[in-house]
Image (cartoon, helix red, strand yellow):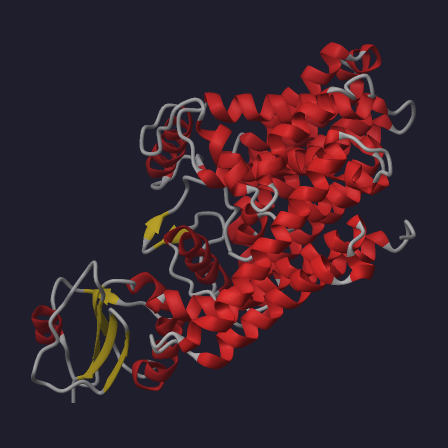
Length: 524
């Protein structure tokens, strides 16, 4: 493949993976709604300096992601579209993959960087966070750019000042997205590399590095000064920021053992994560190469820092995916080689096994509708064909048995898996996919209602889909007692929050999907 075509191939892959059916996944994750609802309030004319969620100040995270989503709402002139809310994450995911390829080419070569970028794009964590309106993908992008700018500054004989300025900008934007990780991880990686690289050590303490810190401070400090300015909200702002920092380093809400990421990172990088231990061993053998040495420093320091932080969650491991993907891409490149080695045999065998598993999954989808469980035929058959076709051709077709062709077949299978999950599996396993359908049917009645009371579960998600505030109530009787003329009551019952629907009055609208039941009542 020509070098000039590779970025276009990656761009097409990212578009196929990150853009389809952004609205199909129901927006019910509380973490996502904590970004989208404050952003919607900003886009509707709310305070951009002091974000609010459910009427309360939301200052535990810096506001850049709120601003990005609010800007998307403003440009689209729509505040109730899940696609618009999630599109910035998809675009930042695409930018991260392209940056990983461009930066990785200078570290380990173009072919290895291309494979690493494809590994990152098709890893579970990237697929998950490039398709939701959370801050993690933006943090990953800015942290990645800061690391690459810093490495360029340490390695460059000329133009180092521009790269240091880029480091300061990217680290500052990352900090304003989700806090200290955007500065701590790049600095640790650069410091570790400078410790083992004579030229890098000299540049780490030069004028450029100092300028980068000044640029970083110029981006980060103003917002904190404004929110901590002596006002009525100062005390709440100080408390929120202090609590966020304390929970990050000392909290126990998500306390996990030191070795948490040893098993969570391979799981988060599926379907490639099982190769990671072998990939680290392989790149260690090439540590005499400068790029490989930096890659090891980057991965090791980030891994240790995240492991030392007491609070650990799977989505934090997204910050480890870029170096881990390049390391895995370096190993996969041995599958292309003609020379026989354990790495060549491992990569080719792993790829064949992966295609065999996808083929089995496709066959299972084809057979599932005919097992008498009432599963829908059309979407499952379509998903089965989409999964089985590239996997079967990669395994059986004589002309597609070469490693590059099989790797391309695996990428096509991953694209098919994204479509199958969006259009076939999500409506099948997630009853909450009923919520946007119910909200769309209820909106003509709720939009003119002076007040809409809500009882039950998934109320924050309904607030997004209905694009209006809801008044929570403890039970239907109290909500109905508070209703005036033309008010409405929403009742949402599921397995975790079962609620009995009243016999009188009859609902104006009722929908049910497995254990989820949604009802609308109107006060005449």
